[in-house]
Image 1 (cartoon, rainbow, N blue to C red):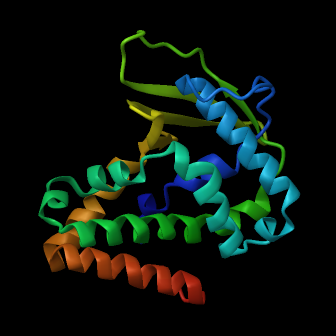
Image 2: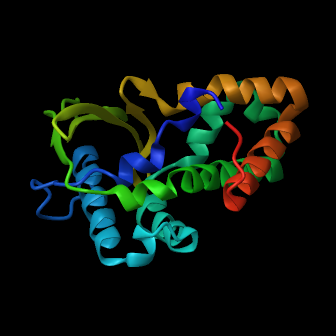
Length: 210
């Protein structure tokens, strides 16, 4: 596995808490959305022992109920694939989105058991009123060490949606593009689907190669 294949999309949502400024729910503004969703997810984790133990079923339920409504994972997958997305059939696209989502869920399930009292500090949000693509920037203090954590969102008819995340200077989409491209060059779109599917099977069985 390449180092950047483990960029934590779900970990970014799951692992960081201490959002003291999010006293009220706000999903109409980009920064309000991030604060609200993070708080709701953390409240669920703290009250659910199954999630804390890494139960994939409960974690998937949490993702589907609390996170996916505010993300555009189809857009994330599409941008990670680049031009090859247009060559995939609708069925292939659906498989890619689902397998990519499950890969990230399975990869970071274990991180939930390590949630502690990290503190997150949001940087001042700057955007023009007519902007439709923005970045919400934050810094997470993890045992005294600052971790850069930024969210990229775009405006849809249904509201703001997250589609990319930056951890320590590495954007999720950019980190996956090279590996996705390599798998597509080797075996086409079906080759990428096969790779993601096999990877999920390895993670599910605990047989993960380095």
